[in-house]
Image (cartoon, rainbow over all chains, first blue to last red; front, side, top):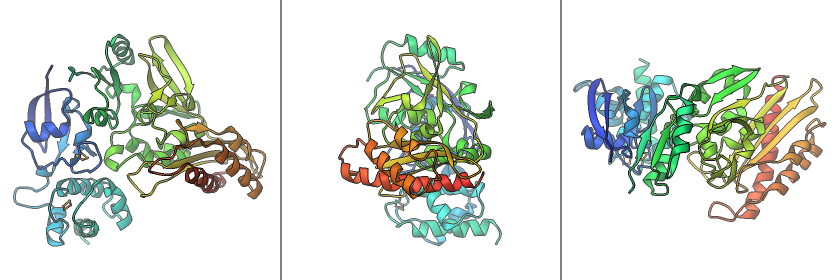
Length: 158
Length: 290
Ligand code: FES
Ligand code: FES
């Protein structure tokens, strides 16, 4: 199979990889770049565990081919904390039990970050609709939604 | 598995040539939210993927002859975020907003939603109601095709080998126009329409309906334009008598299947209920800009 050479920027670092055309960006992140923070729940766009931000747009890494990622900027969960300084969303999730098993959490955090960048003061309903594509088997969603709202407030300095 | 070839040409001519010359199964990919899933689930094993996102004219929204030209690969999020388009065609946006999650809308396009030819595609009934025209480019040149004539059966379209939908034209909006789309689903989000209704209408200064188009989705092998339902509103003030006729004509046009998401009888019943609600929503929007 013909492999494609791609270079891409992930969380500010330049990477290159040889990818087969059917491999998804999720495969590339996890298996080629060893950035395993982004999770695979379904590989068909249903669960949101693979949420990443590509050139500023929130999307599922499983719904993009690796070959399409030539020259793009990707933001993943690995780029969220600055060293040992957690992002306010991460702090809120820890403090207010926004996670249990944690498999959905990287996707939820990345999706929530994309929301707060667009809308720093979302209503609970807006948070629920925005995160409708992120499935969580554990929390029953309420703690997760509340954690996002608490982080948003914190980030607004309120 | 056959060897998959990926091409991302930067002109329409190159894309058409690739598709025309392809020996095996070739798939056009815009957002990939159907194509990649179908490959992942082994429902489709193409030999060639032609990614059309690098073709500049296929992405973006521009003004044209008083209406809008929308590139077929324009993403759902681009459409939702485009203030003038969303203000002119709120019913089209009602449909686009329902295409999957925010993540999916970051990639998915109206061109893909139409060409995937699912009977339940949410952006298709509002585009039909809007009178949207698809610009189809292929080896024999360009054709302008009303959206309702693109899907022919579940998963099938009237596009010939080598043809691509390049863009859509949405016509100018006269004063007093409003459109709306609603669907029925068991869950509010992330679900597939059991039935859907779109209505686009125009009122004159006296509030009399001068034009109306009604389209239904998920209740037949393809989304349908229901001419009788639109005609039931034209010449009326969209009063109770007209609404009754609209509901009856909409129900009469349904040819649904029984499946796990709804029985035939349920789908027909709910389509009528939705027709009434959608007419009210379109009417309110139309009255807001007389
Ligand atoms: S792994 Fe991508 S949406 Fe589930
Ligand atoms: S915390 Fe377990 S799936 Fe969400």
